[in-house]
Amino acid sequence: MNDPCVLSLSNEFAAVRVMIDRSGNGPRLEITDMGSGISACLDPLELRSLALVRHADLAPILEPRAHEDAAKARTAQESATLTVAVAEQVIREQGRPQ
Image 1 (cartoon, rainbow, N blue to C red):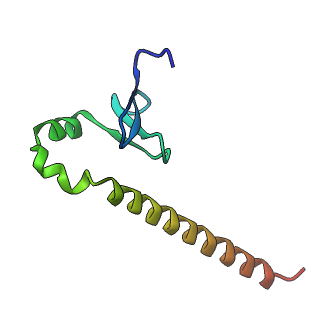
Image 2: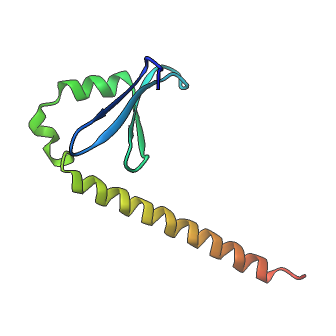
């Protein structure tokens, strides 16, 4: 990645890619967790708020297992929603005359 707007950071707990996303109404910072592929975009107001928060206030969200569990739960929820949608489609199709 030779793009000067892309930065990869890692340590023993996490690996992330940080880049400027200019596709929206204004520039945002896009942060991608390299392990899960999950991304989040933060606008300047969100970044300012993050800069002003005390480090101790971040402690509850800095527990690595909490995020992994939340990501797994979100993935499970999305899979369940997709499964229900597919099942509903099959039921609708079975009810149609052929």
